[in-house]
Length: 280
Image (cartoon, rainbow, N blue to C red; front, side, top):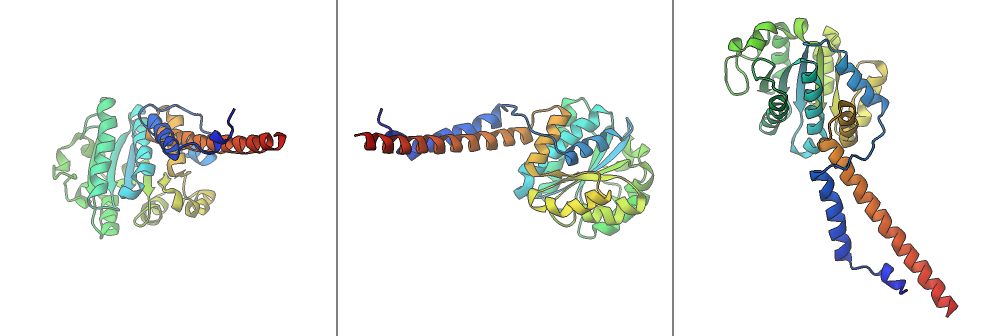
C-alpha cells in the first residue's frame, strides 16, 4: 500500500466531507447524546415548578449575531410552557428590529404546532424603547397601561382574553425567562423585577457571557442559566425535542470527529511510510 497517499489527500476532498458532515445534522439531527449539566437541569426544573396554567414572562434580548445560540432556548421554553398550559407574555428589549420579529416567529411556530391561540394563550408586546426601566416599572403595576394598551402590531391588549386575566407583573407573573447578550439583559431584570418582587428568574446567555452569570446562580438570584448552543442542546434534550440546538451540537461534534479522523489517518500514513522506507 502507498502510505504516502494518506498524507496527501486532496484538501478539496477534505472540505467537501467536512461540509457534508456539518450540513446533514442541520437537516436531520443525529441525536448524539449530550451530558446534562446541573445548571440546565435547574432551568428545566424551575420551569416545571410553575403551576399548570401559570404565566411566564419571556424576554428575548438578543441580536442576529447570537441568534443561533439563543433562539433554540426560546423555542424549547415555549414548548415546555405550552405543554403545561402555561401562558406566555413576551418582549424583546435589546434590538429594535431583529428581536421583536424573531421572538414572535419562534413562539408563534411552536404555538401553532401545539394548538395554542394568540391573544388567548400568549401575547407578544414586542420592543420597548430605551426608557424601558420606566416602562417595565409601569407594567409591574399595570401591564396594559405600561404597554400603552398595544401589542407589537398595535392591536389593543384590553380586547385580548389573556390580558383580561393577567393584569400586572407583580401579581400575575410566576416566572421570568430571559435570554441575554448584554444590557438590557438578565442583570436589569434581576435589579428591577426579580429581586424586588421575588419572582424567579432564569434563562440563557451567549457563551461569551456565561461565566458572568455564575455568581448569581450560586447566590440563588438566578435559578440556573443556559450557556450558549451547548446549553440550548441540553435543554432541548430535557424537553424531548430535537431542535436547532441539538442539530448544531451534532454538526459541531461530527465536524470535530471528521477533523480528528483525518489527523489520525495523516499520522498513520506518515509513520507507516517512514517505517516502510527504513525496511527498504
